[in-house]
Image (cartoon, rainbow, N blue to C red; front, top):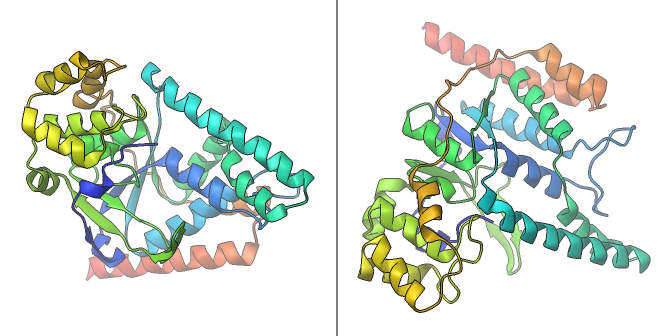
Length: 337
């Protein structure tokens, strides 16, 4: 679900080429779930091998990361650790949406409306431990770092940026910004367009700078956290009823201090959560201090996982790997000279 502060945050477009040589920290779960939801057959069925094992996540990871690596971008995929108990309400809401989609999917199949069935099938995606293990195998074989977070993946990504292990967080959510991640990259995708309710729109990578955001909104770091809590986070989905991003911004600027902001709302009976507990989660997130370990690229392991085990087209995989290796050789040559 994430934070809904996109309407008030300043951003600017960049080209992928501007990220050459940069290290980006990626929230692994969100990316994997996105691939499972979007890479499907027209009837909504995910890609599978002959044994019926889902391969959409592997297809998405391999193709996107191969393209990013060819652009000279280095990647750290961060996997979630333990979820905070306060996130249970968000999980319950997500499960309710999935249950509703399952009923609608069954009805559409019964009516032989396969276009409608395909739409709802995309909402039934599930990421299991086996998929996560396969993703880690593929990523490390491609020379991409895998990092285990202590808590929330987004917050760990922000920590990697703050301590200098990564240049920016790559995510569509804003959680990393609220915990002080220096830079956030959105729309890090191969696609140039995206389908929306109002039609197809052009998309390009965008950078959101933390310091610039605070200056533009005339907030300090604590006040940005307050805005996040007011509009709603994964720890208090929905936020405070009747308060959107612009109203939250106005309220925080007026009251200034967290205690004053939430005390008034409490007196008005508008709070049904402990704001201070959520504030503490963002102020002092649970993060790992372990170093990042960069694995060695292993062509044989990539071929084994994708071609031998999951029946990806051999020529197609080899073509991608040949291109990757050609870029690596070129970069090595440039370094030598």
